[in-house]
Length: 388
Image 1 (cartoon, rainbow, N blue to C red):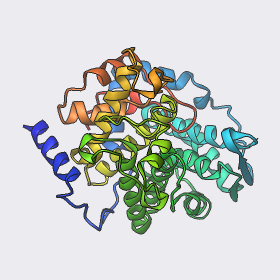
Image 2: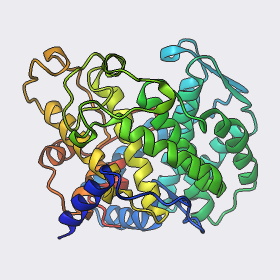
Image 3: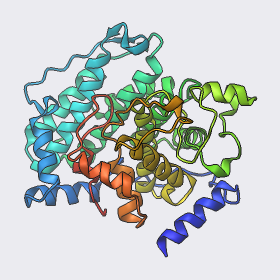
Image 4: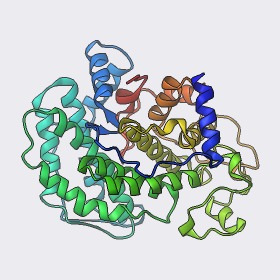
């Protein structure tokens, strides 16, 4: 019955029969509430402390990673300069990895209750908030999106669960508001994974700042971009587009979709580029949907959930080794989806009861899911078979 309701709601949204309410932001924000909820943290902690798998193995992987090293030295810069493909790379890797480390330490704190991890997360966040003033060069929006996706996840856990105090949390909030949010909130007309990652950061930052205006703006851009990133047959003969991109002919759309001219349900705008970048887009969709659910608006029962389900299943099928037909990307795919399936799979399969055979096989094969060293980390631990 729940699956029928999901599909009915998705079909109605695709047809345009349902409208997202104008006041998308919650009246009262839930904390911690960026990608991971209090209930999910408690579930993971209980499982790890009981030695249950796959959570214990996932946590052991986290603790053994470089991101959980209590001897880590923050490497903040006043100006992070990132060119195309991080060339030049002046602080790009350092910023992303310090942000992931802060989130890693926050998770380690919550599960172990060892103050050293909370203090390390605070040290990393304080170092950057005392130093960073700008992101520059061509990859600045994407870099800001990637690092800005991890910082609020760490900050939410520390601010709302650590009782030892965080004196500079206000300065950290100012950094997010003045350095990160202006760079990402207006979106991007580049490949879809850019804007999706930027909106993930914008949504997370808006939750931490309790900024309802920015939250609504980011969510609106997210919904438009998701519809333009994952194709459903019900979209028509060609994919939906982002109006500002002026993709007003089939030829322009095909070029933007990496030369792919046959459109089938679950194909993404970057499938024919490579699965790695496609994974970035899918991951951001799942993270925003998860944050929205925690904040009281469940998108999994809408066309967002249907596009996420289809994108996961389509990519998983080929990642698992299905032969590539000649009509798809010239008969050749660049695989490597990354550790990005846990959040969407848990929400759609475990919570809503939808069969997702290929996604399930890939998810279980890749456990425990680690980090992509950009903005994804430890999702078997936080979302693996997590009912909360």
